Amino acid sequence: MIDLSRLPERVSIYEVSPRDGLQNEKVTVSTPDKIRLIDALAQAGLQRIEITSFVSPKWIPQLADADELADHIKAPPGVTFSALCPNPKGLARAQATGLEEIAVFLSSSETHNKKNINKTIDETLLEFEETVPPARAAGMRVRGYVSTVWGCPYEGDVDVERAHAIAMRLIELGCYQISLGDTIGCGTPRQTARILERMLKDIPASKIAMHMHDTRGTALANILVGLGIGIRDFDASVGGLGGCPYAPGAAGNMATEDLVYMLHGMGIETGIDLEKLVWAGKAAESIVGRPLPGKVHQSGVRSLRA
Amino acid sequence: MIDLSRLPERVSIYEVSPRDGLQNEKVTVSTPDKIRLIDALAQAGLQRIEITSFVSPKWIPQLADADELADHIKAPPGVTFSALCPNPKGLARAQATGLEEIAVFLSSSETHNKKNINKTIDETLLEFEETVPPARAAGMRVRGYVSTVWGCPYEGDVDVERAHAIAMRLIELGCYQISLGDTIGCGTPRQTARILERMLKDIPASKIAMHMHDTRGTALANILVGLGIGIRDFDASVGGLGGCPYAPGAAGNMATEDLVYMLHGMGIETGIDLEKLVWAGKAAESIVGRPLPGKVHQSGVRSLRA
Image 1 (cartoon, rainbow over the protein chains, first blue to last red):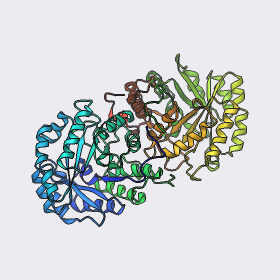
Image 2: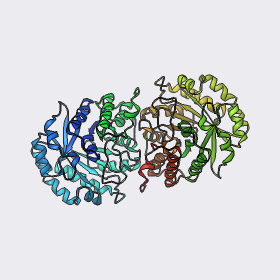
Image 3: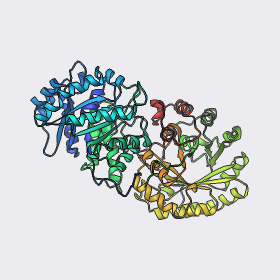
Image 4: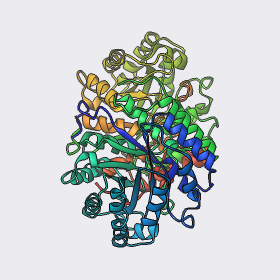
């Protein structure tokens, strides 16, 4: 049941383009260009930005400059920078740069997790046991991603109970929020309601975020369902930068500007300046040297009405 | 209020690509290629297809073959072909080809109507008085389009009372259904609810259709609102073919395959074979010789769940 007269007054957007976006680009973007993108995002009013990933450069050469990048840029007041850290080694690197927030990532589908991380889900969770509590003990905030919740490119449907159990485990370990991912962008509204309602039986809405891909055009419809159910945290990537290289056919993170356009049009506050965000989308396009799929940075903003 | 457990079990899709799509393409498609597209659409299960427009070839050279096209193809059993007819002259041409349904078109914004049709709204309605009742008297069904209901590229916000008054007038004249258009694709969900709720105060849901553009990515979210309010008729264009040449920045009709993907994923029947529709999208791309923005014909269909 979505009561359009009773939606959140304000939502928080977690920007993933510098990490999730750039790690999936064929080109390796220079460190100064990454800094340019992150600056543009912060200037547009994004307060939570995932700037890089402390994985082995062997796995993701596009983010091989993680230490240098995180060393060079410091979050302006009111802004939190975070980075993906798959294991204690990554955590040590993140700590060395002074980051205050990290994220851990796994899949709710065994096959996808294996292809993506080269570990079973249980092995991945064991590694998180050595990563999340130490990070918490060091005063850092930790966010958890659970991907393929709406469907897996290898296994098809994913049991929501499996995704739920993983989310619960990540919360027990100390994650402040779980970002549920529609990695291949296959979700539809009734399914979204079913998944979120199951999660919210045991998990408060403030601890759940939605990470939708717009592969089949349904991302905003699914987010509307999430808003109606009480979700107030949404991941997005400016211009729709990124996807998932291990998910055949996957393309298009939810474009931040399209999400913000809809939210502002509904009178929901984000703290973001949409015109500046559109310019960040243009910057992202010039940095990766290809047109990006987000729509509002192409169409432009028009007068917005609540 | 959208109750996802109480949505229509079946909706009807009105396909506009051969008319609204092709009239906005720079290339003029050959008559055999148009027939190929229309055949592919009918074979995919579309039962209502707007095949052409009986306007002066001076205005829309892309559809100069309207008489020849409508003469050559006949709707298979269970399928209705219709055509846009702006005036009595167009009606006479449509009648000569044996078409059983026509459509009339105007804007709810004076400036847009003037730029699009070169007439005031009142002049346009006067012409419809000489078109719609005669068509009805001849046993034809008539559908009415009201465009720019969500916003005008020249005037900005459009008063819903103005759009409502025009819709009422078209129903009085004998239109069986009014298709409300978000011509520049600026609509957001709360606005959509407000517009539709106003319309449904005086007009039964069966007489209202939504014609959404996906210019800013919000089309499916708006359609979800419409489904929740009881709308069961939606216009779409395979591949997202078309837009509006007189609306700066406008691009992208709602892609039929993206709409059908969402509906089927929600367990809502359309009578359409999505795999065949994806192929019709590929055919549309090859016919116009450019990639089309619809997403599902690019990503492919995956297993669908209700």
